[in-house]
Amino acid sequence: MRGILLGVALPVVAAMALGCAASAGGGSGATTYRKDLGNVTPYDFSRHTQRILGRYHFEFEQMDSTENYQLFKTRWLQRYPLDDEITMGVVEIQTQLTLRARTRGGGAAGTADLRSAEMIAQNMARLRDSNQWILTVFSPEFKEYIDEIAQELKTEFTSGIRVFR
Image 1 (cartoon, rainbow, N blue to C red):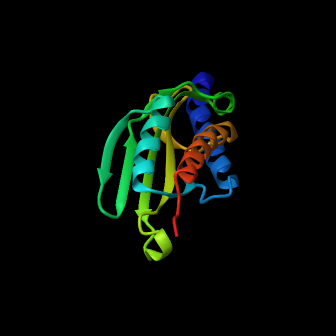
Image 2 (image 1 turned 60 degrees about the vertical axis):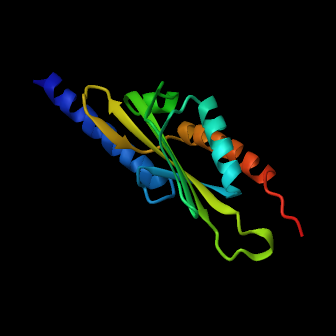
C-alpha cells in the first residue's frame, strides 16, 4: 500500500515542483520560454536559422514565409535530461523550437526589409514513475542552453544588417 501511495504521490509532487519553478521564473509561469532575437533581414533569418539549429540537431517540421512573416518550427527533439531536470524527476525530455520573424513596418531609412525575430521554446517531459508526457517548465540549465542558441542566432542576425544611406 505504501509503495502505491509513493508511486502516485511522486509524480504529483514533481509536477507541483515544476509548477512552482515556473512561477518563480519571472515570466508568466507558463511552459513557453521566449527570447527576443532582435532585427534581421528575411534572407539572414532563413539562412542562419537553418544552419544554426541544424548544428544543434533540430529538424524542421514546418517552414512558412509570406511577404511580412516567416516561421520555422522544429520537430520535437529527444534529448538527454540536464542535471537539474533529473533532480526534478525528469527521465525523458524533448524540446521544440519555433522561430518567427515579422515585418517591423514603417519602412523608414532603409528598414523596409527588417523583421523583428523571436524564438519560442517548449519542453515535453516524462517524469519518474509515469508514462504520461507533460508540457513542462524550464530549469535554469535549460535556460542557459536556450540562451546560448538564441545568442548565437542574434549575433548572426545582427552581423547581417547593413543600412546604407
